Structure formats: C-alpha cells, structure tokens
Image 1: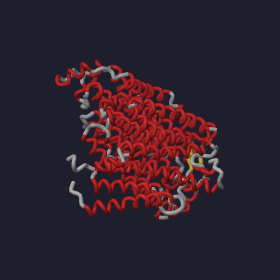
Image 2: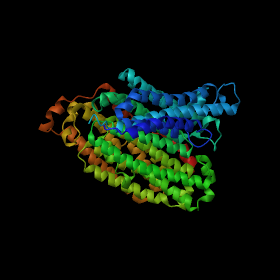
Image 3: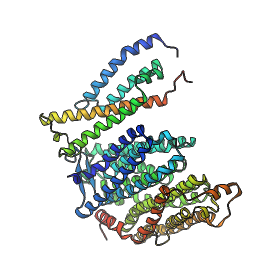
Image 4: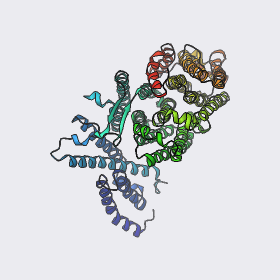
Length: 142
Length: 498
C-alpha cells in the first residue's frame, strides 16, 4: 500500500481527539445530546480511520479480533449486570435508585445510567470495528 | 421475590445466554449448545409459570426501571402474549435441540458459536416483542429479531443464501420503516407510546387523518413482516436456502411473532370498533387472506423442491390466521389465534422432516424422495401426520382451527370464505398427497437409489423433536380445550360475545 505522508500524519494527530470526543459524547449521553451508541460509533471511527490510513493489518494489530469479541461481550455484560444488580437489591430491572451506594438517589441514578451508557458504548464500538474488519479487504493480501 | 421479575427475566436471560455462548465458544465449541439449550429450557419453564399466573390472577404488569407507565416502559402479559410466549419458547426448545445435529453438516464449524449466539439474540428479540406493552420497545425488539434472522439465513454454506438474506433484509427494512413511521405518527398526535395509554387516548382521534395514516402504515409494515400474499416474495428463498434449523425457527417463531404484533396493534392499540366500523380494513384483510390461502396453495402445487413447497404452504397457512382475524367474529378470531399454535407445530414438524431428508440423504427434490419411507419409516410417518394436520383431517389440530374459522365465517354470514377454506383444503391435499405418494408408493429413481437405500432415520437428537411435534399435532387436536381455555377469555375480553 502506497502511503501518503499527509494522510498518515493527520490521521495520527486526529485519532486521539476523536477518541476523546467519543468519551465526551458517551459521558454526556445521560444528561444531554449523545449517548452510548453515538459515542461508540465515534470511537469505532477512530479505528476505521487507522484501518484506512495504515492498512487493515496495522489496525488489526491495535485491536485484534479477540479483543472486539471480548469487548462486545463485556459491554452487554455491564448492561445486563447492572440491570440484574438492581433486581438483586430489590428494585425492578434497571431500577437504579435501589443500588446501595452512599449517595443521594439522583446521583445514583445518574451514575448507573452512565455506567449503562459506557457498556453500550463499548459494545457498539467493538461491533462497529469488527463490522469494518469483516467487510474490509486487506490490499496486501489481495 | 424472583417470581415478580419473571416478565423481564424471560427477555434478559437469552441476552445473558448470548454473551455466555459467545465467550464459551472460545474455550470450547461444544459448550455452546448446552448453554443455548439450558437457556431456552429455563425460558420455556418461565413462560409456563407466567401463563399459569396470568390464568389465575389476570394480566401481569412490570415497570422497567421502576418508572410508572406511561412514562416508563411497561411489560404486560395477558392471555394472548402468555399463550404466544409459551408456544414460541416450546418451538425454540425443540429447534435448538434439532439444531445441535443438523447444523453440523450445514455450517462451518468455526461459525457454531456465532450460530448459537445469534439464535439466542433472535430469541431475545422475539420474547421482547411478546412481553412488551410499549410501542417503541416493540419496534426495537422487532429490529433485534429481524437482524438476527437475516444473519441466521446467511450463515449457511450456500452462496444463494446470501442473496436471499439480502432480499429479506431489504424487505424487512422497508417494513421496519413503515412500522416506525406508524409509531411516529401516533406519537405526534398522542404524545404517548404505551399501548394501554394509546388505547385510552386514541378513540376521540379516530377521525384524524394522521391516526388513519399511522394505522395503514402499521398494516403494510406488519403485512410484509408476516409475508401476507402479495408481499411474500422474500419468504420462499429465505426459507429454501437457510440451514434447516433456521428454516424451522423462521417459519415457527419469526412469522408467528409478526402475527402476534399485528393482533396486538389491531385489537389492543386500536379498538375493534375502529378497525371494523371506522375503517373497513377487515374486509380488505379477508380478501387478501383469501388470496393468500388460494394463491399460496396453487403455487405450492407447482414446486419441485420440498422446502420451497413448504414455504409456499406457509404463505397459504398464514392466510388462515389472518382470515380468522379479518372475519373479526369471536369464533373466527379464536380459530385464527389457535392456528398460531397449530401452524407452528405442524410447519415446524414438516420443516424438521425436510431438514432430516437433507441431512441423511442429501435429497431436496420431491421427485427424488421416491421410496424413502422404507428406509426412514419414523420420519415418513411423522410427515404423514403433520400433512394430515395441514390438510385438516380430524382429529388433528389443523382441523380444529379451520373448523373454528369456517364456523366464524358462517356466523357472520360470509359464505364465500367457507368455500375458500374448503377449496384450499383440497389444494393442500393435492400437494401433500404428491409427496406422500412418492415416499410410500414409488420405486426409487436409479440416480438416487444409493442415497435412498443408505438413508436411515436421523439421529435421536433430530428425531425426538420431529416425533414430539407429530404427537403434538394429534394431542392438541384431541385436547383442544387446553389452548382454548387460554384464548377464549382474551377474545371475549376484546370482542365481547360468547
């Protein structure tokens, strides 16, 4: 693959900011525009950008197939786990206010909703990335 | 304590199961099947507990996240969803058992964890549709189950499966758009998504064109999902090219949940007075269903491939369910809902048998099945029972639901549909008799002689679900009062009358 210096450099510069922005979108999801899905997609776009600029093989080195599978399972696990924890502590599924944290109820709600958003974000990021890897054909391999 | 949370656990359990299958598939592929099987069995037990609770104490309500409806999402289980949930999970358990052996020859070994994961996601979506009392939640679960279904169709080795999966995806997405637009329209005029709340708020707005448009969108969207006759084009290929176990799932679970969603929206979100008097949509429904019944049967006669023939027969049989609902007489609706159970049992059995023929002999064409009854006696016998039920010969289940639908048509004075049912029964007999004749009374063709003589009844894991379903065809026909006890209170509740 013939690499363009400009593309590679810009990509290297931009990727950290994309990821930071993704985290911002995920964290602000519960209280304003954004959320786990949008943030996850933005985060995945960072990996996709690396894949486009440096080649799929290089991107695979940074996030392997096992990683994406593990992450997608983890995210779902966080979501379902928090939901079930609420049942264990006497609430309904996703009844955040029942979680026994030493905080006022609105804050517990906010935190738990945040954690759920993070779970969703992780899963979306992993699935989006692996979708790209599945579709993308490595130029060197062809 | 846990008993209060069963409505949500029936949805969360397969989700957790899917994660567990995915991770276990890494350690050892053989772990996937036991996990999936255990999940569906536990779910089936939960659904039975739920059903018995509903029968004793009336509808169950569950507020997700402790938010009160109509603000939060509410799960509601009444007789209809309790019944549908139990039927679907019963078929899930059997298809999962059947899949264990049958997919080994049909998909790559490294895709087995993916297969069970997606299967459990499909179950998640389907159970979600069944239990939810929230319109938007229904749409989300409809998408989950549809996406899982597209993936399952494409998972096999056949190249054509990719094309049929893509067609299915396009049609499914069009239908999802219609449904989402319908939900959006209702939300604009009412500001609520809770089904019970909508049913309360909507009646004064029935004159509004927005509500009427929403209604039409729902009908079109769900008609594509259930493959109502002129919109069925995605169905035959999807059924034909997917792995046998997936065909069983599609024909029993996915199509039935579409019908359930349709019934729910027709009768629980809108009221019977609206769908019968304000917009005479039921009449249109009846004629479309009649076209489906006759058209599906006629095309099925022309098929040479067994799975494809069964697929067209599904189009015809879905017509029965919709005809029962369309006549909108309490007896006919009872028959239509009963046919959800019946068709799931019969068609599940038949598709499993078609899969068993492919598994043991590799034969797909009806003509090549000559003489197979000698080497696969139990499978062929099960086929005859299920076929008899499809035709509607007493005392099988197929007879009971057709009887109720015909009776309902007579009661409401719509003679023509009795003729349709009669004509279709004869057509059904034609195409099933052809298969039975080839299986029992013909000598094998030389080209397939080897395959026929070396064929054996499939292994126990595949034979057991086939025999259970064949037995169910007869048992539910004789003890038809058991499902009726569940359905009749629901129908009386929505339509009044006897």
